[in-house]
Image (cartoon, rainbow, N blue to C red):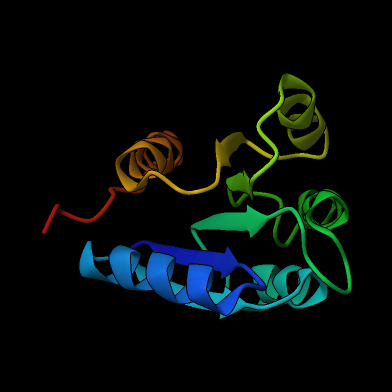
Length: 130
């Protein structure tokens, strides 16, 4: 089962997205701030990371840089999640080390498609659709 690290400080967003991912067969672990996300990217060894960019303690931009700079977590694909939908925001996320970018509110089919593409590129089969 593919393991997702969801780094999201908003409880409602975290609950909604984690339930929908679990329903589709993913294992989900959660962090509520950027520092916890950085730490869990190493300790939990997720297959993929969904990273909110507006986080307390360490923001998502810096968290992405630190996750990708650490050889113990650098291999996990990283998808930035943000309400900022401008082209410059996408470029900033990609330059911080994110592998893809998705806007909030999350459209689950679109996000799942991005996740599946990144997982397949790593040789990890996404869960069968429920």
